[in-house]
Structure formats: structure tokens, C-alpha cells
Amino acid sequence: MVILIFANTYLFKNMKYLVFIITLFMFFQINGQTKTLHQFSATAINGEVFDFSSLNGKKVLIVNTATECALTPQFKKLQELYEEYGGDDFEIIGFPCNDFGKQEPAGNNAIYDFCIKKYGVSFLMMEKITIKGTDQHPIYTWLTNSDENGILDAKVTWNFQKFMIDENGEIVDFVPPIAGPKNKRIIEWLMEK
Image (cartoon, rainbow, N blue to C red; front, side):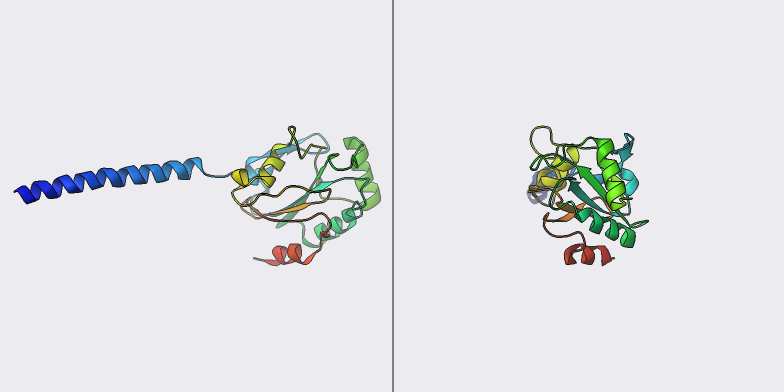
């Protein structure tokens, strides 16, 4: 009888410990979850709100752009990449910003006209935003902060830094500004199934 009471007491104490551990684990799992791209929205260059949940199932390349940068000709390669891979499985989204060298002084209409007339851009362009500092757009807070995206910290160093996001809206990697849109890392990522 004493052995049975001891066994029940031991089991009860360990059960309480096990329940505590499971509860603690679940708390951190729920509260530690990171966001995905699909939880965001932003304003397109035409003024309409774009819901990123509509990109579920597509790979996405997000690029901060500027029309007066030495790297501005990358618009041509971005458009070529979009024409080759864009559609049901892939989207490119450009975010104009004036954060690096003040190389995007124009307003949204002028930026849009430039992109269309000079490079024939048909991929999605968003309104001009701030991507660093206290006014950082929430998408760039997510892209650059592992506490937000759960994967990596990636300081944006200049215009035309490219972020790769998978079909589930999770960040995969980024490519530095100087690397062109059709570089090996991006092409291999697009070819992965």
C-alpha cells in the first residue's frame, strides 16, 4: 500500500512537471511565431492598396529601386526576369525609396512614367517609401529583422537590394545591390521546385 501511494505521488508530481513543460513550450511556440509576407499590405504606385496574401503560392522578389542611381539599368534585367519567369509562379515588386544618396527624388507619378517609358516595366511597383530609420515601412522591418521574419538579419546597403521570398511568404535569402537580377543565386532559386 505504501509503495502504491509513493508511486501515485511520484507520478502526480512528474505529471504536473510534464504539463508545465508542455504549457511552456506551447506558449513560446505561439508567441515566438514569426510573420510572413502574406500578412502585409502596401500601397501600389497607382494609389490602390495591395494585399500580399494574394501572392500565396508564388515566389516573390522584392527590390528597393531608385531612378537616378548607377544601378538603375537593373530595371531592364528585372523586366527581362519578370517576362521569363513571371506569371502564376513568380512576382517582382519594386519599392522606390530615396534613402540612399537621395537618388529617388521624384514623386510616384514621375517614377511610374520613368519605369514604363524607359524600361517597359510591367511588374508591380509600389509607392515611394522609407526603408530605413524611424519611418521604416513595415515590410522592410520584416525583411531586415530576424525577430520579425524568423530567418535572417539583412541590412539594406544600397538601392536594388533583392529579397527572395518563397511560396509560403517566408524569406529565403537576399542578394546585394551590385548583383544583377539574373544572377546565379536568383535563377537557381527560381528553378527550385
